[in-house]
Image (tube, rainbow, N blue to C red):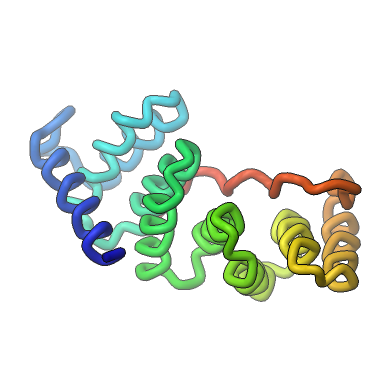
Length: 183
C-alpha cells in the first residue's frame, strides 16, 4: 500500500512537471531546485512542489527535492506524505541528517515513539552535538517512561544549547529541519 502511494505521488508530480512551467525544457535540475526553494521560502508551496517534481523528472534520485517535498507536506500536516518523501530522501542518502531528524518528528507525531527514538539516536550517532536531536529524544524518552534517560538527554541538549531547558509539562519537539538547497 505504502509503495503504491509513493509511486502515485511520484507519477502525479512527474505529470505536473511534464506540463511545463517556467523554461521547463531548457531549465536544469539545479535551476528548478533553486526556483522551488525560492517559492518554498515565499510560502508558495504549490509552485515549490511543481518545481521539485521538475527536478525529479530531470534527476530522479535528487535527495533535496524529496526532502523539500517532505518538508512541505510536513508543514501542511500531511504526515503520511511527509514520511514517504523523507523515506525517499533517505533511500538516496541513508545518512541525511535533516531527513532522519524530520522523519523522527513525524514518527513521534503519529505515536510511533520507539521508531522516533531510534531515528533520533541515529541522528545523534551521525552528529553528536545536534542539540535539538538530544532535546527531542528526551521528549520521546519521557513519553516512553524512560525518565532517567530523558533527563540525561535534556542535560546534554542544554549543555549544547543553553536555551533548551527541560520542560515541566509535555512539550512540542523542535521545529523540522529547514529546506535543503543541495542534492
